[in-house]
Length: 527
Image (tube, rainbow, N blue to C red; front, side):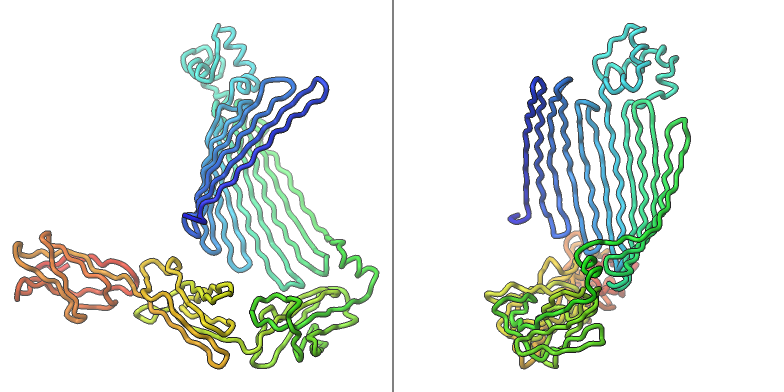
């Protein structure tokens, strides 16, 4: 539980006095979050407020949300249930909000649904429907609470004749519903990045004596055409329904060019060119970060826009003069046996300073995690070395992994929680020595939880044995005729049931390759 539970609380009080006017505000909030797993969390909390205006009654509010958040790679979802109450507008109500999101490649998608039901106070009901208050007075009815009003509407036919019941003149439990979706598609190279975005949203509000509904949709496109310059277009449509007024619709479209006036753009307006400089440094600790103690690496080739080339000097430095303002592609290359610890190809504007981290002949390690059928297993591997931050590697879909590290002694450990359900590794921790001279190899084999569970229809009171002769496995049948075999290899086998030397049942089975329990029933009739 340590490290999984977090809590946060805050409060504020504001007292404003100006002559005869005095106003007080007080707010407070608290939240608690518990991470059940890496991909699942629970949360709850409370928000309270109190407002004392100069004139009128004090207003108090409270909101209590309970939520669950789930995420798995590029997917996620949040569900929140909440209770809210505001003494000025409602007697309390419950709401729900669901948010889902996903991304893949350059596509991003999200959607939400939010519903809130609030029981109004009597002040709100009579304010929105003054005719109801007059009708109650004419009938000699005194209303002190929301429950009194509900009984009056139910028990007095005169209110129905006035249209307050059959005509559904108003709704005693106003509902607000909101929903929406957003899709974004990003693409293009950094110099010409572009974005296509679609948004749709709807809102429906049912008040005490009226309702309204609105739908909004927009489609926009933007493309980066130069440094700080963007071409864009937008189409926006809105439809609104307000009771008897019917639907109203308006559409707006817009096309334009946006220019960002930052430092680079202003320099372009007054200067014709600049420089790009930098340093190639030795990064033996593989941090990817330059420090004042780092030594320069000579002989690194640096290219600008595939048209100009230079080589770092003894101190590891390089410079390109007379570079036109705008973004340029910078590429660094090293000889065999050396590797970059930073990106070797960048898109940078004129006037930039860039550092390239280089390690000379690091240690390499590759390996694979497989099951008993030599199929790759996806999991996470932690490589720990004394005095160095651990390195976490995730295998590819085929179970392979490759990593570059500093030479030394490492402890490699498979994260059991990262293994797929039904897979396990007994020797999850290995000691390994990495050196520059020879790449290291490491392989783990995962056991697959396959089992057979079943029953035998046979003579009672006799000792019955179930066996798979091909793999030398057997199990005793209990007094209820049941048996089980675990940790089985995949394949097609003949399984037999024997009472003493007599075979009472035999049948063909196929143990699947994936984890699971195969359920069978044996007897004279087979399956």
